[in-house]
Amino acid sequence: MTLDAVVIGSGPNGLAAAITLARAGRSVRVFEAEPTIGGATRSLELTQPGFTHDVCATVHALVVLSPFLKTLPLAAHGVEFVHPAAPFAHPLDDGTAIVVERSIDVTAASLGGEDARAYRRLIAPFAERAGDLMEALLGPPGPRHPLLMARFGLTAIRSARALAYGRFRDERTRALLAGAAAHGMVPLDYASTAGVGLGLIVAAHAAGWPVARGGSQQVANALSSYLRSLGGEIVTGTRVESLAQLPPSRVVLCDVTPRQFLRIAGNKAPAAYRRRLERYRYGPGVFKMDWALHAPVPWRARDCARAGTIHLGGSFAEIAAGERAAWEGRVHDTPYVLLVQPTVCDPSRAPAGKHVLWAYCHVPNGSAADMTERMEDQIERFAPGFRDCIAARHAMGPAEMERRNANLVGGDIGGGASDLAQLFARPVFSLQPYATAVENVYLCSSSTPPGIGVHGMCGHWAARAALKKLGVTALRNE
Ligand SMILES: Cc1cc2nc3c(=O)[nH]c(=O)nc-3n(C[C@H](O)[C@H](O)[C@H](O)COP(=O)(O)OP(=O)(O)OC[C@H]3O[C@@H](n4cnc5c(N)ncnc54)[C@H](O)[C@@H]3O)c2cc1C
Image (cartoon, rainbow, N blue to C red; front, side):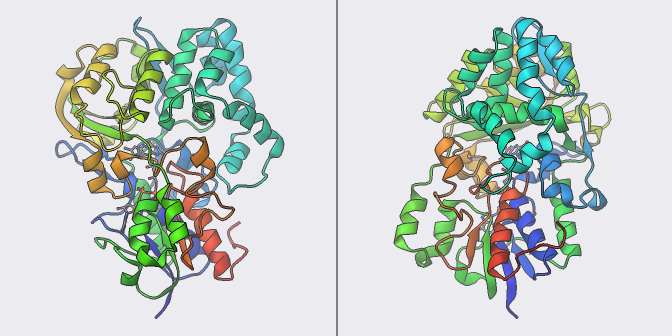
């Protein structure tokens, strides 16, 4: 029997694609290389029995805000999002921390002086319309909410440095913006890095930065459970090496990055398209660490204990230097460390009274450097005595990350660099970014718009493009 669709890869985008197809009444089968589903939303007992660690993604603001995922019955399929008291904090060397609370006013007031007003003026107009903003940012290219987007775009297109030094007077506020913008893994004086910081801060106020109770695997499990309830199938432990290996289907959607796609497509990919995809650039890698702790992190700034995410790196200048180093292929001694303490709001991940801790830093793509000491030094800098709390640790460099998930090429967690050029040419410059030059074969991973994050929108929009090919133009659930 010919299937309507085959999906290669069961990351959030592969599963979102499959769900979109199955919801439209199409038959769909997902092939996943690894023994378990979920791609970068897997959870495992990486350190000790009883400690559940998110191997990759852990904070799910984008699931909550995703125009597609929020239409799915994820709660009915077992996902519960839990919020820390504050979305994130940024400790400084003087022993204080700036805390981004859910309330814009409370956050702004804590900044004091002119920056309080500047922060409110910058963030509030977008946070008030976060739903519209996300619809436009995570939608396919095209005019949606044009006035809002024009206003957002004028600020977002700037570099984080220009925004920080143009709008804020205090080094503390500038550091706060650097910590948020550095999620983008692009040097902070590059165009559009302001947009990363701004978008994430707006998300923190509008939707919080929650985690999934029990671990991110719950998100993947809910997506697969819903997919199966719609009649979709998932086959794990099957790496697709070639399109020829797939059962007959009318369309194929690939939740893989361009490099893997070229291998899978082989000589079916025309030479000109192959050359364009070969020019696709991957960004820095990450060095990921997880710890089992027998006590909470002893933050010098007590407020950090209330926050889910902590940005470690000190001043704007220090964070910018670390990000530039990773981008330029240099290992940095005091890296920016993005840390999450899920057990502040989800104690189910560890035995009673114990904790899990999650963190990564950016390193050059494919770097073999062991960042364990340097990352723990950065944590000690803001939480003296941290090492005494460690019961066990697990570390993964880029090679190990890629071994566990082939999409993490050289440890790049974004499916390709996300600088301004590749935000628009993702994976190539095209009005139909999901269609490939191989007939009826689509790309649906984070290497397509809107890029990195657990939002499922790449998969959803790719499936919409494929559905058009299958003759479906309107969807019942919209
Ligand atoms: C360390 C880390 C931390 C992150 N933190 C966050 C976070 O906190 N919040 C957030 O929103 N995002 C985060 N992200 C980003 C987010 O996880 C990704 O953007 C998202 O998972 C991309 O989804 P995807 O479906 O495109 O790819 P993936 O999730 O990478 O899934 C791809 C799947 O395809 C499978 N596959 C690959 N090749 C083949 C093949 N040949 N045959 C069959 N199967 C194949 C892989 O095994 C994998 O299961 C993080 C990512 C990483 C790595």
